[in-house]
Length: 603
Image (tube, rainbow, N blue to C red; front, side, top):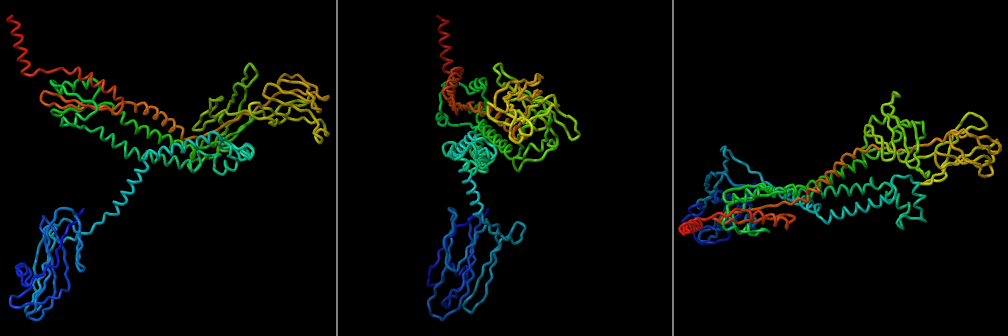
């Protein structure tokens, strides 16, 4: 890029007689007559090359009467190699900023305007290396610098710690609301449970819940937007802070002055020691040692510097997996009676714009059997479903028994055991063929209660007169007559009849329904990988990054070091290493030792 030139033109210097400069360079004046010059046009352009400046002047004038005084404006330029700025110039002058000029070729043309006035034009051509005229375009870079400055400012704001903390608090608050309010229920559920008379948290009624999308908060645009903003903050922090720190930590920085080493956190000076010995001891303690002449540099625990980057990457992976689950998966719930089947494409509904259709959705699921395990107290302990995956050719391609916390997984589809119900009771009346009476839920929750009605004759149908059958589980039913009086209890399959209002009833079976939750979640693998990486990098981040410098100054060895964490342990370790450095003997010490030894032998 061309460097702007600095010009300091000095205008308005008057003189009354022809100067040597004007006679030598411009020839605008005769020695016999004085002329009054009326200045019409001055075009100036300055070219600077190798500290020398050239001037182009084009002047036209009219001659005046003799004997009058003359006034001429000259232009002087002194090169300035300091600050590169442009000073203001006169009205009819034009300055053009040019790059560093190539070699110049000058030509001079003289034209007679009158007998006493000549016009001299000095032409300066810029010759390129190929000996052709070069046209140097003008370059403007202010716009690029503005865009770069705005981008850096944006990155700096996104990498702000207060902004990241605010984002985390907002996400945590919305997640807490999503935990308190059940997600994905029907509007009728919120009408009943969050009416004006019983708002959640004291003020959240169904209007707030549905209006603010609290019924599906994890797929709401504002929640996904917060995740995206937090992701940008993590990327900005990693690129502007963590990566530069790692680059600095990886450099072999030899210190060549005693003053610089003594500014470290832990310092010491060994009067008689060698840099090679301390390098050997540091290497034995796991340090990476580098030496150049009298200088030494060693470090260990560089992984501790890399760990924050891994933590950020793991968090990004978790958020990416969560977002993919929210807008790229399938979800559905069904309640299927034993012996029936359902189509996967009917049970699973897409969650967002990234939900892609799959061939596995063309299969169906058949409920082979549903049964419940009971505790000794008679309470429900565990419930199971035997399921089969059937393809379009009506062939069973996969079978498995599921229970709570033990799902079925097939080609990305996961089927969980989530609930159970009673769909029908199978009875025989007065020796007839068995038939099913549909059971309706009378009470939900942990204490389930289901019931059905067996009308007695035509009057029973029209006047709702008949036998009531109630059941709380699949173990037994309770029968009441048409007056509502308790008659008795029967277990299914006992084949023992019971008389109710002169009607013989045999309970053959209680047919249960299995409640299944189905998911196709492409974000599960990224989320699990992210959590695994987060735990690993969190542990690695506690590793200390320790650095040691040493400089040989004659027989003395100056040692200093620092660590980003666990400084007390680092100081203790370095002192132990310095205590093990062997002491070297100078010539004087060796001579004194030899004299002492000789004297001892003589004695």
